[in-house]
Length: 82
Length: 444
Image (cartoon, rainbow over all chains, first blue to last red; front, side):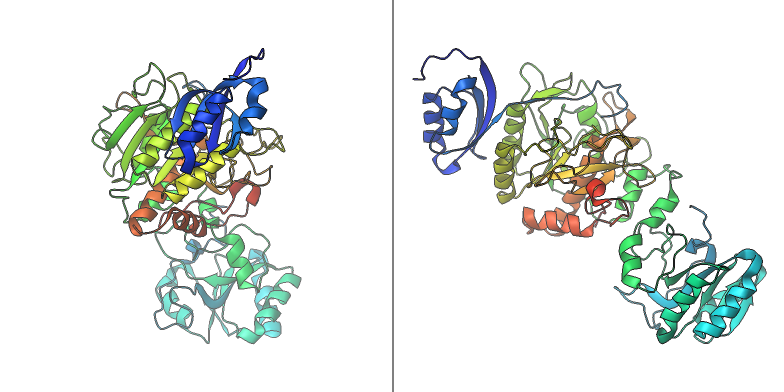
């Protein structure tokens, strides 16, 4: 169970070792990640975690990368450039 | 430049000469030179070429004598002067080519001199096409000419595309000349969904999925339907012109962006995994977020793209629309900036970079890999109709469609092979690689 944390949770996406996907996801949970999506076929997952826990998440064995989840915005339909 | 005097169409079509010295698959030059003369002083130019480069004796041709021209041009002992055009096709021995070019350069009454190329009637952007943009042009190095001028007829064509039968984009990428259809190849389009009832698209969609909480796959924005139409619209749409590249490809429509046009990386990952699981050979993502100059690509997307490639899927993504040329050129956005994802820039009808198209400012993956039509692109609209849209979003599905054609042509090709074929077949452009990458997308 993660240590208590006072920083706000942020969205993250991760790539992990696809050959030990389940155990890595479990370890990521223990590091404080709340998993919102898993893609074992590509070895990726998404979730939320307290911002100050990101270094701990990155240190989990089997975690290859942690990036901040960003939101993509298309222009409104009537915008001249899409 | 459309009707420039160096436009070879002005000389009439050159007949193919199967027995000629330079015909065949790879040889596009006739061995002759085309010389553009000062119309008021044609004699000086021809005289100096005769004395300095020993060109073959000159026959003069006027418009009414067109019937003899083909025969005259065939003759290695004759140069042909088209008096009304102020241009000549001159026969010169190969050891005199350099002399001809140097002479042309020095002589004020000669405007340009270039190796003559074989020209084919219907092919707008064929590599055989003649240089048209570089004035004045004096060249003896045929390779340089070839490298620098390949798509210039398309440029000459300019904005004056006839879009009655085909959109300008399909013509520019030569999809209008391809016999391939992408039959059976699966293209995943990750976007705002699709109008599943659109008469052009209904029956083309193999599978749909929405990764947007609370929203069905139906496209409430228009972006997704437009992109799907460009990638895989049918050969015979309800209404002309034809606008879809791979007319028999199968569509996997993943909704990862809401009807309001927003979506998260997490939703996109989910859509990509779904696409790979469904056997997509191409994943088309007309989406992205801006990055700062110097910002590194997102590692997670890169890992994922590598795995998708291993599983046979090529990922293409929009370079982004953040530039405001000429004042500002912004870096390729994410995830197109990943090394293993192809970043697609947008071209205007003049085959020049669109003012909004992002450029290869950041290294390591931040390059534009290829450019495709992205301005005033007509495609399907929700509700069964059509609309024109502009953006690197519109350029991207052109590339996805061509990848499907390549996959059909070589079903055993790996994703890496497909990528390599795509980039190798692109048409080099004179614009900076920063903006157009390998060049103008070309259908096989």
